[in-house]
Length: 164
Image (tube, rainbow, N blue to C red):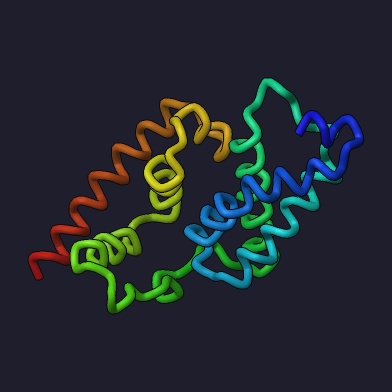
């Protein structure tokens, strides 16, 4: 990113190559809409290029990028008068998915959007709580609390699905 800031715009293609899958995965897990995720993904990297002067070396690139992606997705939801993605819009588990994975997938659907988001970032993206705090704009303690509550709710939803 420092190279991009110094005017080496060709370095942007390397940033895209390294990080586009991760950003897409994050957007898709929040929106559950492939087309929307692809559109916003492109917009995220355009915004990074146009706002390169705002990047600070003290902030890791991935949390900064995911924060931009999150804000752009939330802007899209606001513009279209959508609060969150409804459960019905989530992908159905695939038929070749192992049963326990399908059950976890269904249990994730039942979580509040902010709980799905912290689990996506910490468990699927492998981010540290400090990085997640930077992405979603809350304290590290707030992230820990959300993760704790999300896991509790996920466990309850999973048990509900598997025992019914």
